[in-house]
Length: 426
Ligand code: GDP
Image 1 (tube, rainbow, N blue to C red):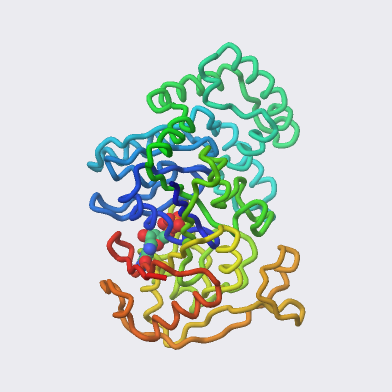
Image 2 (image 1 turned 90 degrees about the vertical axis):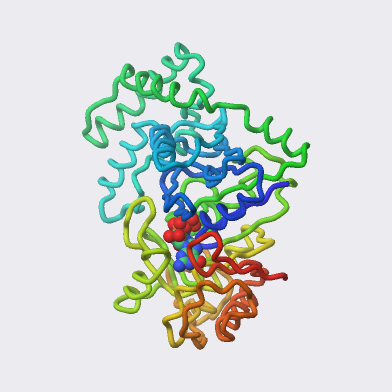
């Protein structure tokens, strides 16, 4: 049986914490999409960690951690993260990497960087981790699957072919030095040595594990708004962020995914460019940004200040629906305790037409928020463990959101630590 933990919004909803918490009850934790371009922040007994590539189960010694076939493997980053957690006293994790996953090459990072520079002001706000060029190559069938590292002669021929195309782009579009086959092969040899201890047929492992009744957690990156099909295209990421894609990116039967926990933050934040209807600006935004998350709303990977706004029930209802949420975890509720009144975006006004249906990007660009204001609770709710003990206005806020998004809020997170969680029976 598989549980997916995924984002209902723009990412940074606090999935890392919820996954880390649920990993306690799981035998296996799996990453199924994305790469080192985003990150989870996890706080536990070992300290505070920003994970970009490793599954959140690495802090649980009994958990098998799997990097699935759908993930973009930044091999050096995986090695760095393993070293970092081990140097901070975490026991060496049990880690398996799919032999069908593909590798983010140094030239993917190079192309990402050069393209962002070429686009200048019109860029996608890429983190320059090579993710878009990586997935482009994967689907153009010129990616490098880790299984190919077992036959370096054949791989060398393939690399020569790839470089013909890459070098034309480098020379004529970017006016950059050309790549050499020997350098790329040396890079691949290095990756082979790093990956060797972890490679496995992870789908066969998972199929056996499912038959034995084991439980697995699928760990999503980013959120619905960043999905290439259902998000705010083109300001999206390059692999699907939806729970449904978990079946593909991890290689499990779709019917094994029985529980889908969509994580949504009690206010909104987004990194990079793109439509964000409930965004706020100026001092109001700066206050929320500073108080937000765990030490402010700044990117876990990039340190960039995040754009912030109030809760958007239109985007979140859509976000939960596309994820197929069976459960919703509402996070970072404690942060809102300073507000006298809490605005919530409950509809969009598009050229005078008021709607609660989340539109395509073309219409979204013209959408204006329709606000409703709820009374604040004006106190610190950290440390509360029972839903009934939350201030009345706080419960009203949770129930208002639940009613608007149409999916049950079964968990409320009121602090960054693993124990800062309130379960609700719905
Ligand atoms: P993820 O990518 O979805 O895991 O999100 P991030 O880790 O980038 O951002 C979530 C931030 O909020 C992290 O700094 C978490 O430690 C923090 N966080 C998670 N849940 C809570 C919560 O309930 N309250 C507070 N104050 N911070 C939280």
